[in-house]
Length: 432
Ligand code: LLP
Image 1 (cartoon, rainbow, N blue to C red):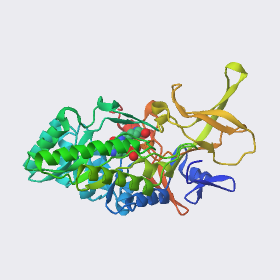
Image 2: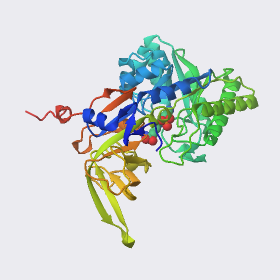
Image 3: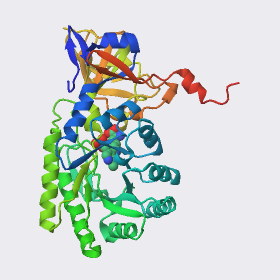
Image 4: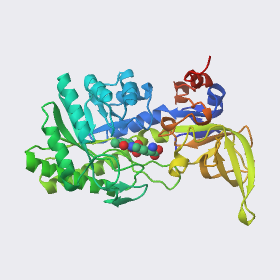
């Protein structure tokens, strides 16, 4: 059970409140987030190393309260759309600590970011550099930028495939002088300031080998920039992607171990290239918010399905599904779940937790072991749903999105309320 929630008198409890009490007040499905867990992970990244800047990747989960926690704990914020920027600004997040990402930022998004005074824009295409230079020039604001490079490393869950990933949409290739041309284009504008270089190799990574290759290649580019332009790159952002435990056997490093390792890799590479060590930054999303949250569902039906070989599988249907957690269907993600409202001595049986949506791929937990007496009305908690579940939620089948409720020291407060059918119907202009 890879998370902060614990059983108290048989009932799962998070942030000092029993799940049955939380559900009595907030209903199901719902995401319950341990505020202390989020804040302490954010703090341990921020304090892992004095000279490393940490930007929380808001795509993992963002709302105004979350943005305020992140600001309180001293982190920066990575946003990748105008929508995420709007949430950050609505929360009063200090603009100078915001970094704007995206491979297709619109003029309006760039203009808003420049006007707001965001700290960095991470540029991703030649078109964008032109667009941003024009906007900065017109506004008379000198905008700091990082140039995102594609280091040719594809990170998977437990491995990486070097050189494999040129063929995707992000960044400037290190091949054929493409990244050098992007840097030259930035340097050519009086209103853009080359703050540094950026690389993001992927997500849910446990092995730092991929970061070593990335650092080696980005530092190599920094050396070529110095030789060609006499400019030392001031900042190196190695992106996010640090893995968390979803099931037993996943073994993530601590923030301190991870950041120390990245710092030593960059120091070694810079020493080898004869470069001053740039300021390092990282952008963890999942590693800050992922483990903090459980999604609690109510079980509606339990069905035995005969498999070949005389076996049966128990299909446990819950009142949410792929609309609140698309990750199992989309990435074959693995999750851990347990019976939350009571303890059971019944023998564990192989089960599959499925949602209420109209397709058979609507699976929440593909392979679970649940007590054989599990029944309609029981509550089921799925662990580690803080990242990329609510933020990727949809209204498929017109199912309203669940609330996110923070719990801390025995008190619960709603961060995002439950969507209603009225919320959905409000968009439907056909209603007389
Ligand atoms: N920085 C950049 C530039 C990114 O593209 C991402 C994630 C992050 C930071 C944060 O990565 P994290 O530390 O959270 O792994 N929806 C997928 C994950 C996609 C991540 C996209 N970019 C999932 O549910 O696993």
